[in-house]
Structure formats: structure tokens, C-alpha cells
Image (cartoon, rainbow, N blue to C red; front, side):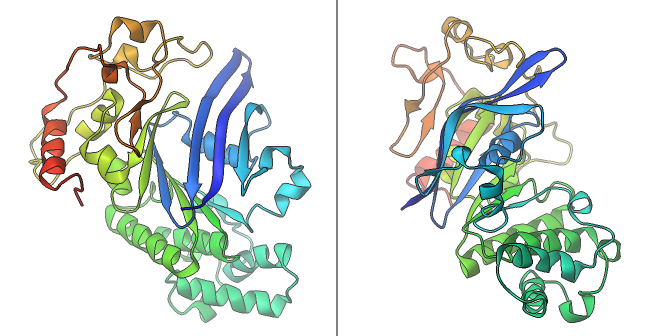
Length: 348
């Protein structure tokens, strides 16, 4: 597969009254043509900051202190804001998590969907509105021709999210970044939006970066998964590898806190104890160590490198070092691994 986006050693800092927050601390990843990469982690882990840095949509007190964002080999961090305007919403587009803050309450839906075409392409207003109607139909808005003149408040939450998706894809972007697009929706509508994104990916051939804190959502859409904690990736691999053969204790904790089909209504879900570290003063060792009951002495002193699990699966934990003691993961994780083995390493 061809790499269309590659992020190398990305560092993002925020200047605050209390000092500098080191929000992103050396993130590396790539996106292949036609695939969906999910970035998963708790709130505050740095997921949204990472993808906003790709498009240079950071807050005014944020700065990218180091790194490269290569789009077809071209470093976007060297591009001016004017040059980035030609890429944002055209080549790389973004779906934001709250449609009510993404949509203009004073502008009709038709005009909002057509706007990116008028900005990025030399098309007439008539042609742009016609394309907007086609895209609204594509994302499943009933009777789109009549509803073009409606305003955001006249649509349901699920329909508003579909409209936000329509705005993001109207220019048929090569990369679509979906930032928690299902968070505010009920489970049924979440599933519909996930199905819609997969369908659109097939129809327009876009690659997707999907941001979420919900590993359950990831299973239905991702090809690869990167798990993020305290501004770093701690594990990444194919979706089956991360779900059924996880190696990092943080990934164990995330998966162990998820209900499954076998979970009874009265069962109590596990949770990860403690809180993430203060990134005003990042720890010199493994940031997850204070919350990790499997932590080793070295975790307090030295950040673990990525250890290879397979040619596509890596995890940054000292537990994978050849000299590390063997530990037993939580029972739920062992059951996942047993399923993974029975199916020959492919649990789908």
C-alpha cells in the first residue's frame, strides 16, 4: 500500500499560565491509501491535538515544536496558512464531533454544503448547489432537494451529523479525519454513522483517520489501530492484533473496561485506576507506570521503546523485553487471545 500521509516525531506544546504543557511528545504514524486508521485513548490523551496539528488548526497558544507532517512527501508544516487553505476541506477534510457547533445556525444547509466547492473550485453557484443536493442524498438525508433550504435546528442530531459529513466530503477529499463523530449520538445512530462512513469510503475512495475513546466503535470500522496515552502512542497494529492480542497494560485496561456480549446486566465493569500524568512535567519513564499494576522498576526511570510483536504489531512496554518477568493479563484479555489463536490469528 502507498503511504499518503506520514507523521514523524511530532511534538506539540501549549503555553499556559502555569507553564508549558507538552501535549504531544514524539508521535509517529502513517496512513495508507484506502485504509482506516483509528486513534484511540482516554480524553486528554492527545488524539484531537494530533490530527489538528496535521491541518495546522491548533489553538493560538499551541505550537508545533518539532516534527514533520508529510502529505505525499510534502511537509505540510512548511506550508503557509494561505497554502494550507487550499488543502483543508479539499485534499484533507475533517468531521468535528459536535454538529451544532460545526454548523452555522443562520445559513441554510444547502449553502453550507456548497460552500467548500465555491471556495476550492471554479464552479458556479448553481453547479455547487446541485452537487450539494447530490451529496446530501449520498449521506442519507431524505428528500434533499426540499431540505436544502432548511436550517440546522430543523434536523435531528443524527441528520446534523450526516450534514457535517456531507460538508466534509463534498470535495471528495483524499483524506477524511473524523474526530469523535459518534460521541453525542445514541448507539443505533452511532452504528448508522459508522456504516455510512464505510460506505462513503468505498464510493469516493477516501482514506480515514478515525478518532475515538470507544474501542467498541473501532472494531466496526478500522483496519489499523493506534492506542494513545499521555501524548504518545503506546501500541499499534492491525485491528485484530490490538483487540485480540493486546500487549500494553493500558490497552488491557481499555479493553477490560468494555462490556461484551457475555457481560451480564448485573456485572461490574473494571476501570483503570488513577489519572493521567500532568504534562507540565512529563515523567521521564513510562507515563502509565503509576496506574499500571504490572509496572517494573525500569518503568519509573526510562521510557520503553517499541518492541515488535509481529511485522505489523508493536507495543511500547518493558514487559516485552526478553528479560522481563512473565505476567498474566486480566482474564478477559486471555479469553480474547484464546479466540485469536483458535482462529489462526484472525479473529474477525
